[in-house]
Image (cartoon, rainbow, N blue to C red):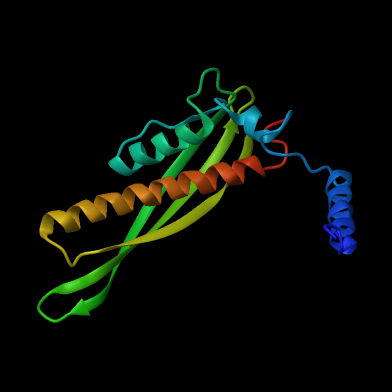
Length: 164
């Protein structure tokens, strides 16, 4: 009675047939965008700590550019919002909202291949010591930059014609 509900198996096979019919390819499979973009994008040089953190996370995902085909221009903006205010103490919870605006251009032709914006947010607590709060703020910024890099990489993987 292992396959007592054959409808689920048949639905799964039908879904598999539909995804192959629409041109679905795994990102990291043969000819997938993930492999095609590996080491193919050179980002602008970093100028701030947030830029350095973003670039490191981005290169962890897509690899350091060896022979880049694309150039990535980006701008990172952050907004900090305090919350959970206590009298005589201040904000006990701080949220950081981050926005990354980007443009990917083909180095050989100079044509724009992708552009847009990715966003993310994270939070940290300020109820510890001053050193603990400072460390928490730095860690939150690092998490935010990793999040923005991950969302950008995912966006580039799904961009039509970028990894072809």
